[in-house]
Image 1 (cartoon, rainbow, N blue to C red):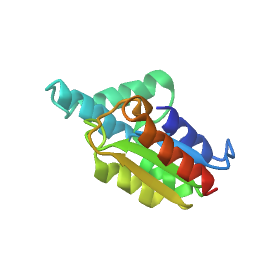
Image 2 (cartoon, helix red, strand yellow):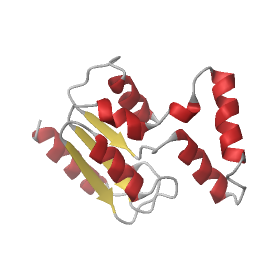
Image 3 (cartoon, one colour):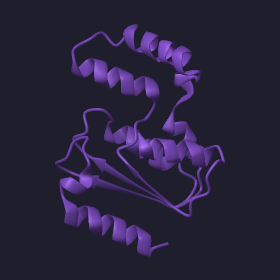
Length: 138
């Protein structure tokens, strides 16, 4: 969620980083809720829509518009996205679409045997290599 927060803040011109590293961002808030409900075999419709709606009311924002895939259109700083290929919450296609929507240079690094976890703890040398390579290109 931290990567999405930085992506949103950058898209809304609240912060001005020189570059960003996003790890396992979600595609849209609604898709994130649907994937969690699917994991526990709960019906995604209408439950996901109701949860996003009620969360929006409770927290004073439009959860249906909280979509990293859309924020990416407004971001032009170099961005590294790190993603586990086996992530049960966000598909590779969704993460690829976020990367494609970025307006600046972007690099997508996939951890092939990894799900949704802190990626540095899974394969530290691979993580370090990806981050080092990205930072050296700045």
